[in-house]
Length: 267
Image 1 (cartoon, helix red, strand yellow):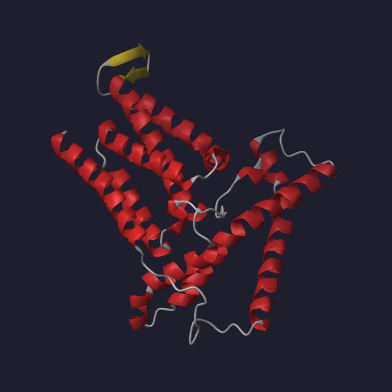
Image 2 (tube, rainbow, N blue to C red; image 1 turned 45 degrees about the vertical axis):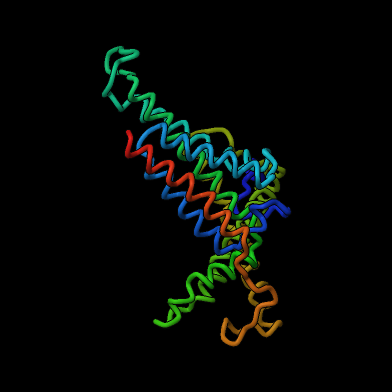
């Protein structure tokens, strides 16, 4: 199950979303998050849902890939829904028994929060699914380039962020291998109390830390062998250029963003 986590993976493709400039995609993703959080009610959030579904269809990412992004947070979604369902007591009661009270406002809030989280996961996952790590690094560096004037190591920060994102799938795969090896040796990680399960994680965490440091050392050695010495004087094989498609993508999001604002004003 742990191999189902797809955070940080890139899915190659030729869709309109794939062809957008990486800098534009990062800025649009931030604007998309803002759009979801300024939505005051279900109607405003519905605009965000339509935008998310349309963008997902345009990106041509397989549904199975997106489901793998949502699957690990199902427990969080259920807990969020239950908390809002049972602790929001305003509105017309649907069901009431002792200290348990379910109201229409509680149901609405539970649905609202779950839908918002799912949209956030899908929208942000599309950024890494449709953008290669190299393009993501270049885009982050270009967006943060004004900070170079105050001596901020922008290139190094962008490189660190991208490497961290890139190694998430590697570490997940490594964790799955270690867990399979421990189970083959008779380790029981699924039964017993919570303290027993936590104790069973120790034989997994120690090899995982050792493996992580080994990967880091190998990567550092490979970069040194290729004469990597930071961003100073470096040129880029692939130059980021804004195209007409980026303008259409910006207008596409701006239309939905304006829709959310109008609904908030009317509501």
